[in-house]
Amino acid sequence: MTRILALLTALTLLGACANPNEGKPPADLGDFRLGHNIVVASKMRQGPISRDATEQEWVDVLTSAVDRRFGGYEGDQLYHFGMSVEGYMLAPKGVPLIYNPRSMLIINLTVWDDAAGKKLNEKVETFQVLEDTTGETAFIGSGRHRSKEEQMLGLAENAMDQIGKWLEEQRSENGWFGAESGAVEKPAAGAAPQASTAAQRALDFPR
Image (cartoon, rainbow, N blue to C red):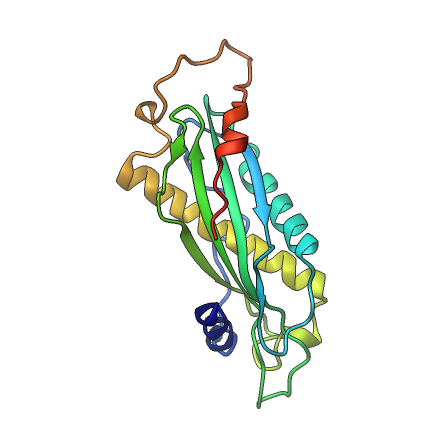
């Protein structure tokens, strides 16, 4: 956890540029259909001088963000997300031109292949997410212009951008979400695939 706190301290001092991919879903995820969408925050660490946010607030905002971004895919195979919040910092009001912290978020993600009954990434993937800047927040920080809820939502959406890009890379480089990723009979036309009960029990939450 010392590493998480060190990252929180270092990254909040960095600037962040606007994200040109904000809100754009991945172009192609093959046979992907979102199954279980599970977020935990029981071991998260709060960065220095951060606004407070509860575990449930992070679970709610990230679960909703995943549903919005990835819940619309209608592929023939189910894939489950197990996400954990490792740390966060929500910028308070700073001191213009002297101390203007940036909000940031650290999450781990595991993707589970329901048909194969195994994780696609044996090692959790860690995402370090910084908030976007605007003309208002570039020099005085977001704490003066954004509420805690707005900061959390912005971080969640930027996290989805990073996850989407990573999933596309895995599909391109490692064949994820292709016909070979789940050797089971496809459901009948119009029928949605059903998640196995074993998947819910076996899904390992990344720590």
